[in-house]
Image 1 (cartoon, rainbow, N blue to C red):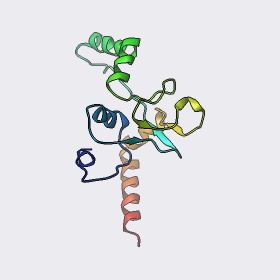
Image 2 (image 1 turned 90 degrees about the horizontal axis):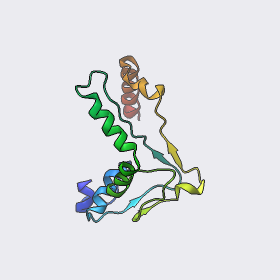
Image 3 (image 1 turned 120 degrees about the vertical axis):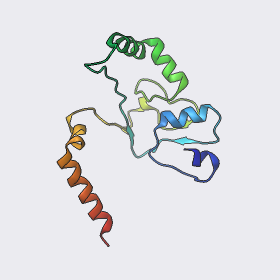
Image 4 (image 1 turned 45 degrees about the horizontal axis):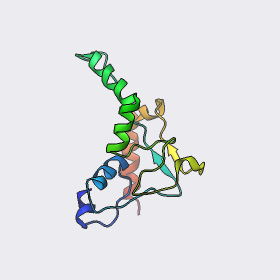
Length: 135
């Protein structure tokens, strides 16, 4: 993102909007545009490991993140996309409440775990490499 800020690059694609918006709010000379054909929406997840040293602190943190105050801080400090909030100032995008169908959430589920399977991963990388070598 620093290459965008410096003007070395004029456009970048597939950046996490929360990071870009944090830089924008800090005064970076950048613009943020969410594509109008479709925009993938990344789900944020948080977990408390079974063997966490202090699971109660993890629980308190998660409760804070889910609280009204925690949500307000997240919105104020950075751009966390939500279907029930307007797009923040300075972001060129379609309103999530418009029903346009532009926003496509990446659903957290078993399909995302398939890349953790080493055999699937090797096959995918092999096919990817082969596709890049084709003329």
